[in-house]
Image 1 (cartoon, each protein chain N blue to C red):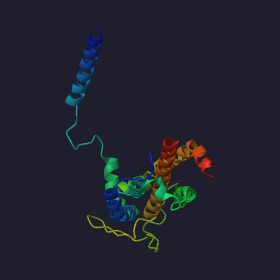
Image 2: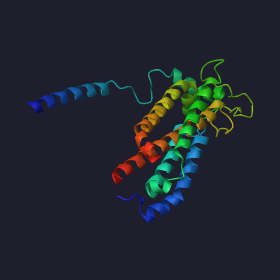
Image 3: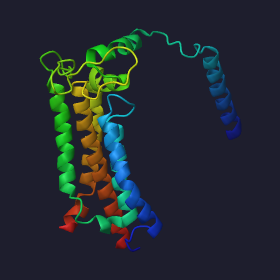
Length: 158
Length: 91
């Protein structure tokens, strides 16, 4: 089986759609403390865009564009950032939210009680942890999908 | 013989499930709601987060999320270790 990817229809639609999927995933991560979703979900959405690209264009179309070492490193950066944010409030307790309601520029705004749309710059460490977990999930799942698909294709070719 | 055994098992399981249904609480009335009410009342004031689920996942139960992230990390490391030979062939 030659590794050519899928038909012209699938490849054309993929070219239109994959950017939108990535933007939607980043939106889900960014608004994780306001709307349903968060780091895990948004990261999975972004990783699904990588999986779509990989299926539509085949592993040959990906060669040279994505560096697996970069993906691994970014995953570890996300994990370390998450743990570091947990240690930020160690003066009170592990995972204490030090930045919430602090009034600082780093997500320190306060939210009025009751039903409202919420404020994007509020939440303290919660949005930062969303970004860390989102980075970790999107790069981790992308690395797994890429290496598994490339590995299985290679076995078929032999 | 085998069919009879299966039938008896089915009877037992259905009987216990029916018994459980008879003892169900009314929908939407948990046994205790102290914890839920605390989260719902204090999430906006304490963490300034409107999504209470995120407040629980990343703040009140942040340690649990650390465990979930560790599971994902272990899965990725396991896959990379499993396919290590293929990557060494590429070089």
